[in-house]
Amino acid sequence: MTKKIICILFFVSLLIFPSQADEVFLSLKKSKVFVRYGPSFESDIKYVYRKINLPIKQIDKKENFRRIIDFKKNSGWIHVSQLKKNNSVIAIKDKVLFKEPTTFAKPIALLKKGRLLILEKCQIKWCKINTDKFSGWMDKENLWGISK
Picture 1 (spheres, rainbow, N blue to C red):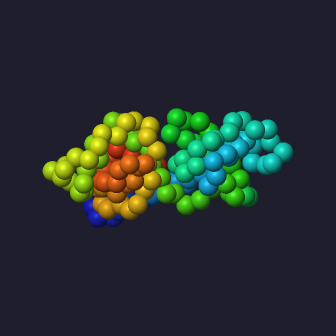
Picture 2: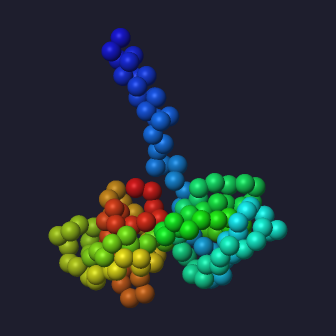
């Protein structure tokens, strides 16, 4: 009887608390991307992104448009032709970039909050990233644009 109750509570918790695995992060394919008020080309342009590879989070979809939200909580609709599989992240805080995936490794650089980073690969808690001048490892908890 106790096992049955535990199983029921487990499945109810899955319904109540959505999983982070449902998060879909994408990146901007072009250096000029229009964000619209609605999911159509007839909708007015809300604003324009001018940063290739900027990571965004998909929060809804309708036909060939994706509703997105960015790091600064701006939202709108973008056509799928302007999006690609996620290949970038943004630093959440000023953090150190390490040579190896451990805090005991040699520090390479201090990266500032809001910096756009190109994602190379991830392990359990660490991601290897590239910037203009540096390549190294950063803790996943310090990155926006990737499911934890």
